[in-house]
Every structure is written in structure tokens, then in C-alpha cells.
Length: 59
Image (cartoon, rainbow, N blue to C red):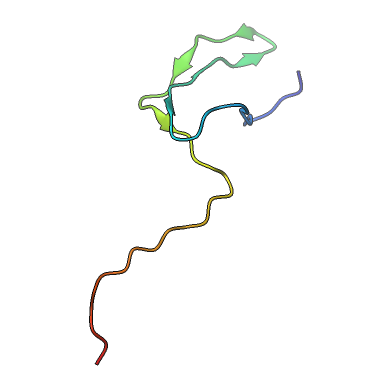
């Protein structure tokens, strides 16, 4: 597998939280697994930003 600093994970359900465990591999072998501290919420990559407007009057 080529060296990389990131990976794209596909097939995850939007709106679900996941924890990830990763291991580094180099010429010395495979490192100990590290796990994310907090779950990551899966969002739609192409979702438009949402704007929340308050009910204010313009004078």
C-alpha cells in the first residue's frame, strides 16, 4: 500500500457517529493502534451550509 497521510472511508451511513482505530506502518513494522478520542459524526460531503435567521426587523 502506498504511503499516505489520509484515507477516504466510503459506505458509512450519514447521521451516525463512528470511532476510528488506525495503525501506522513503516520500515520498522506496524505501530500500536490509536483510537479517536471522540466519535465522528458522518455528514453528507456535499451538503449545503445551513443558515439560521432570527426574527429581527430591519430599520
